[in-house]
Image (cartoon, rainbow, N blue to C red; front, side, top):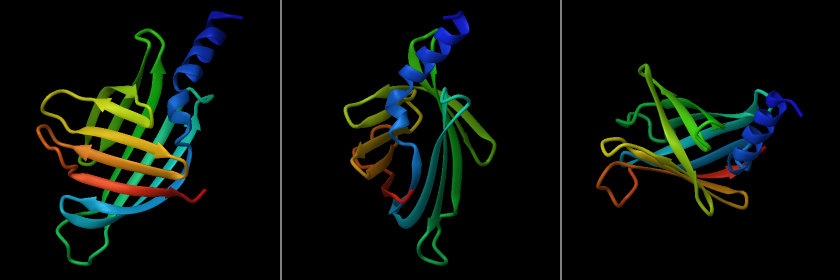
Length: 149
């Protein structure tokens, strides 16, 4: 086995907790106090060494103050640091990168004290996404997704 093959195998193995999210998901929830509908598309890319996650949220009520939201994340297992990492891209031109910890039911972003934390919990065919701002006990965003593909 070459070093390249070894690195690929380690990356794929380390990313295994995120592979369970692969699929198409739809759901409803609350974002910033208003009802939203979400679509989530998750796929393994680049020889299954990255997971690409596209999320789009739209308000359920016309004329609400919540604007449509779209972001994309790339999860990978960083062999050098032996940890899952997420690269998060979001309008307007926001790019951040965080460490990610695997929990019993999913993934948790490890963010600095002034940044929101993202929690993904997978229970069978149900996926829950929650976003917590620092010092909040109630999520600012909570979407309950169901697998549709």
